[in-house]
Length: 161
Ligand code: SF4
Ligand code: SF4
Image (cartoon, rainbow, N blue to C red; front, side, top):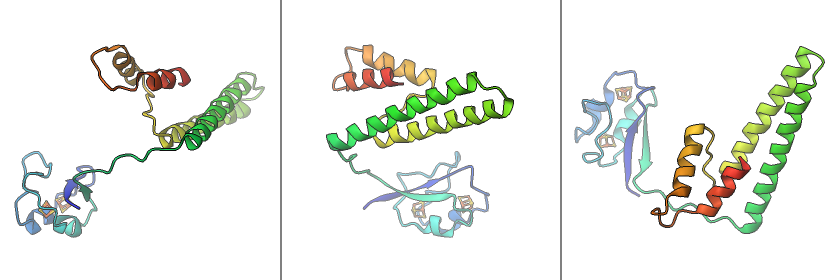
């Protein structure tokens, strides 16, 4: 399988071993982004890098596996139950008699939201968490030119969120 080297700038300590071992000069760029046109995927840079800053990634990713309806239904049911539990925790936080209980319930609500988000990701949905992402999704839903966009699923997702 054809692979490319990708450098994580945040981890790079600039000791330049990757420049030394790369036979094509792909690692030696002005902007620190490894040049995929020159990279032959040998992996020498990733092996040499002492910071773990370089990863080898496939040139092409396999298509996402289709999930059966049963699995999707289960994931949706679990996500819905997490949403209910989050709501309950928030209601309990509102009526909390002590600061400790308030903070505990807010933490439970945050934890339920994270679990719900993980489940939605596993279900294969994009997760529009921010207002910007939601606005973008809405824009795509409203765009009649966007052929093949799963409009109904996107609407359902926005409704659930
Ligand atoms: S070897 Fe690793 S740490 Fe050194 S310059 Fe290359 S990417 Fe950065
Ligand atoms: S994988 Fe090989 S060719 Fe590609 S950047 Fe690393 S050392 Fe150079």
